[in-house]
Length: 126
Image (tube, rainbow, N blue to C red; front, side, top):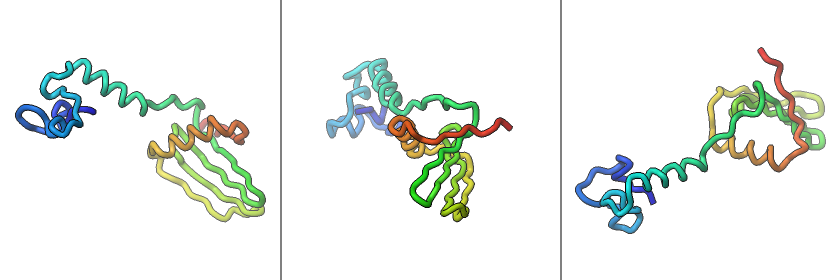
């Protein structure tokens, strides 16, 4: 586990509180080196590293189910709009502020990997 004292999240003399509970790797009392602790931090953050956006600009993914068509627009992994069409009539539309959400990023990543048949259209450059 990461050391809260070494990360600057806790101020104490000696070992951090988590070390006393057996939940710290000991960077606070030199049980491991600063370089080793930094390597652990890099490994933790590596799992959150984002892939580059593979398109030139925004895209729209169309999902069709019986009488309902849903369109979702994304740009730089951000959901920027959605539209629902029931029997050729737009019933719901929304635009969103371009704001990154890690959960949406992960959902989109999974959809792109697992659903090879997605209907994806790139938006025209502005």
